[in-house]
Length: 343
Image (cartoon, rainbow, N blue to C red; front, side, top):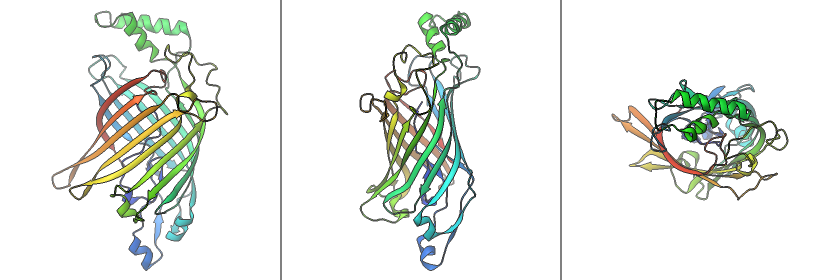
């Protein structure tokens, strides 16, 4: 699982700004702006983070193989604005409700009833966006909750669940006490509330227009998110921890997120996008730079049948921490592949 604010591979030629990664307004053609005052209409319901279906069948043993599904939406709470192009350049404030859900489906591998929840992330997003060729294109602030939706909070419950797994897999020689304990630890409750600030900064030294910028390597966006849970969550209070995270603080592993996002062309078509993300501890009360996570996503829209059918593919690799909330302090490296979906 990728626990971060991800970037979606959206058709940015049709958007003026993103919230997290959600298309908000339709792009206004430059020619229309020069000829007359052009109106745009915001959409209330839209995409927030990536919507993906990842096939994790290359890592771990046979009982660890699964399908990772992630759904993410946002709903605009402020009234959809109709405005001229010049007003967009000055910036518009908006408020939206966002929600991301991530779960694993152990298809053909182990009992999961039939899915295991991994991440639930509702929040209120406030943002101001600008249609600029370079510089700050968006400022963001949010109030969010993030948890894994599990309920185990005592050692007694964990012991009972471990025994239940031993009984369930009594006919499987590969499941010993250590493996059953690993399954049980996945049910440990973990969560926190946090505030965040950030934005999107565009590097565009060639001063390309928005349409050209979507296809040139010299023009790219940096997404910044600084989160802080020290104001509204005592992460050491009331949380029974996994063995890997028992003596660790989440704020030492997650708090600063920097993402590089760029698109490219293959054979004259916009088919590829690259996203690189760095995550470390939060500035206030954390240990930034001590525990580091690096992620890379390569998106490719494989077009078939003369562009009438497109297969949206993604390869994702991660090294570091934050694979799951319940064992955020466990270090690992892995690559997965699958599909990404836009709406």
